[in-house]
Length: 288
Image (cartoon, rainbow, N blue to C red; front, side, top):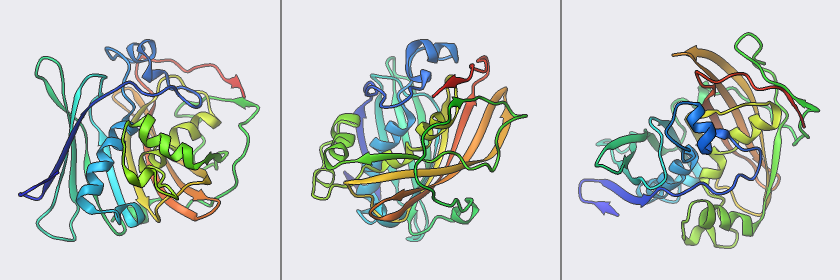
């Protein structure tokens, strides 16, 4: 809904993640999350973002899906049963970014900001900072999915691109099943592919190339170049552009491009993640 002050708000109850469609991230089950120091499985950060997208579209309009951007940081875990309140606030200047915030209202009355950032129309100010990644067709995973640490991280090395076919029915399920959202734009013909799915492409890409234990999504920067429509095959191509240690966590930053076989370039993105949380160990390499 729109509030008189130029603030848009929405709320929902956080639910369990759907069953993983690829290689699972252990952070989203109880054992893996507890091994990384959390009380239980984390709701995927991209689902939090997916729910926030609906409020962004209310505030900025459908044009955000065609030529808009978002930069969000995941601040705290979201757990099943939390009441999630999303706020998008308009700036005084029409050309300035809109503020984005998601607050988890937990049992017992505790409130935590779980996602915060900004969004806007046109090109983001940081777009020129992203590496210009050359698109390549999807490839099979390597015969052996290796692992690495800060001394061996494959910086600026093209990763094997990952392709996925998104049918019209799959596009609808991304909204209705993954996010439990019933909105006409995801059921129209042709349907819009939910923007959360674009932000979620980096995690399966990294697990397509390497072996990881629990990983933690930290931040995403996403620039829409056009509205993604189904049916078509989407391919994510990316490189690791930075890696570092902070507070005993090992972080990495990836830049990538999403290309559709029917539409061409759809989005550019930068993905920040903890690829080895403190207290966890390097997993063994596995065969594809």
